[in-house]
Image 1: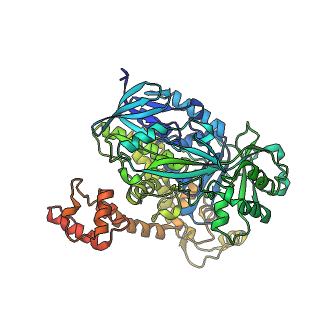
Image 2: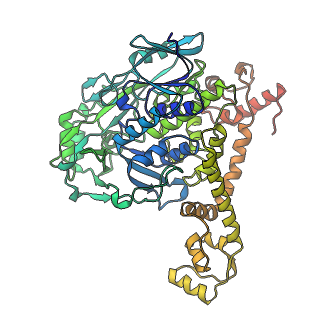
Image 3: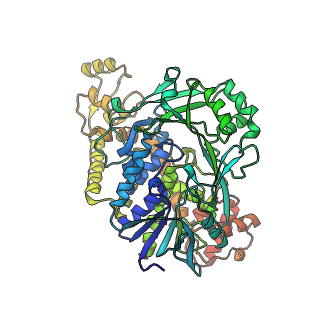
Length: 627
C-alpha cells in the first residue's frame, strides 16, 4: 500500500468525478481524484452545452446544494437561452452553449486550487477489497492508494468500443484509453454488468458552411445564469448564435440505402442506445412517416473552427457520413474535421445501488454517472455531488442525505435508477417528475439551499443573502395583498394603454396578478406603485401568485408521498417470511430491498395488494404505522 491514506478516492475526472471530488474535499475529507488524462478532466465529448429541458433544473439544484457545474457553466458560456418560454413554468429551463475548451480549463483550475484535494494521472486496474468492504484502488502502473471510501465515476470508459460502420476502435471517447480491467474486476466482485451505447455527431469546419441557408438561433438571456454566485453576464451582442436546419429526402435516401453499413443496424453493436437521444438512422427507422428532422449547428468553442451538428449522431462509415453531411442545406461544400462515432460501454445494474449511491455489493463503494446507466453531463454531475456528500456523511457516522421526489429532480433521478432500474441510458425528462410544478427552475434555491447550508457546502454569507431574498418575496406578497385597484379614470386609462382586461370591482394587486394578461410589473404600473423586488425575483413572484392554486394542490398531493416514505422497512427483513405476497412482488422486493413503503410502492411489479400485505406484516412485527 502507498503510505498516504485518503478518506475518499474518486475514480474518473468527468462531470460526476469533478462534483464528487469537490464536495468531499470541501467537506474536509482528504480526497484523491484519479483521471486517465489531465487534458480531458471535465471534457465535453458528446455536445458542447449545459442544461436543457429538465437538465437545466438539475444544474440549478446542483448549484443550490453547493456544487460547481452551474458556476463553471456561467464562467464559460458563449450563449444563454431559456427554453419553453411559451409553455408553463414547470417545463422552463436554461440551456447554455458552452465553450468546450474553457469549460475544461476553468474546472481544472478549480480542482487544482481546492484544499484537501490531490489529482493523480493513471488508470485504475482494480479495487482493493477486504471481505465486502473497499479499502482502496490499484493502478495499472503498479501503484496503489488506500482510502476509507471509493467513488467510481468512469463515464463511458468501461470496456468501451467506438464504431464507425464496421471499423472498431477499442477506446473511450475522443480516442482515450478504456478501462477494460476495471470492468472485469467489477464483474468478478459480483456486479451485474449492462452493455449500453451512445454516440456523437460529426464536427464540421466553420468556414465551409453556408449559413445563409439556415435559420439563426440567437441567445435571449443576458441577466440570468445557472448560479446564484454569478454577478456578471455576457451581453447578447457578445453571444454566439446557433443555427437551425432540417434533413431532407436526399439525406433520408442516403441513410436508408446504407442502413446495413451502420454499426447499429449491421449487427456490430449489441449495447442498448438512448431512447430520447437516438442516432439519425434510428430516427428514420423509428419515425418512418416523418419527412424531416431538425438539426442544430452549434459552435464548439470561440477558439475553434469546429461546428457541432446536433441531432446527427451516427455510426455510419466515414464515406457514407460525407454524403449524409453534404446533402444538408448549407453543407454542400462541408469539410468534416471529426467524424461521428457510436460508443458502446459497460455499466452496472443500478438496482445494485442504494439511494445514497453506495453499492449494495461492496460497502463504502459509491458509483455515480454513466456507470449507473444515465446519459448526460447534468445527470452525472448531480450523482457525483450526492455520492460525495453521502460518502462523507457515512465516514462521519451521520444520517444519509436523500432527496424525495417532491423535493428535487435529483431525487426523481436517483429514485428511478435504484427503484426501477434501467435497460437503456437514462435521461432526465420533466415527464418523469409527478410533482414537476414544485420542481421549477425559479425555486431551486428555496427547495434546496437550506440543505446545502446545513451540509456545509453553502457559505453563511450566501445563505444569509438567500434568506433576505425569501423575506423580501414574502413581504412583497403581503404588500400586494394590501394594495387595491378600483378601476378609476387614471387606472382605466393605463389598462387601455396596455390592452388589458377591465377592472369592474375593487381588487387587490395580488388577485389581479392571477389574471392571465396581468403580471407583477403591469399591476404595479396600473396602481401607480413601484416594484420593491430586485429583477431576479420578479419571475418567481409572478409564478408563485399565478399558479398558487395548482402549487397548493401539488403540495397536498406530495404529503402522501412524504407519509409513505416515512414508513421505513427494516434492512433485515426476510420477504420469504411475508405470507401471501405475489411471487413477482417477492422477487422484486428482494432485488431492490426498498428502505420505505413509498419506495416499495414504486417498484414495477409490486401492486397495492402487496403493499397492504407488507404493511400488515410490519405491524405484526410491532412497527407503529399510521393507516
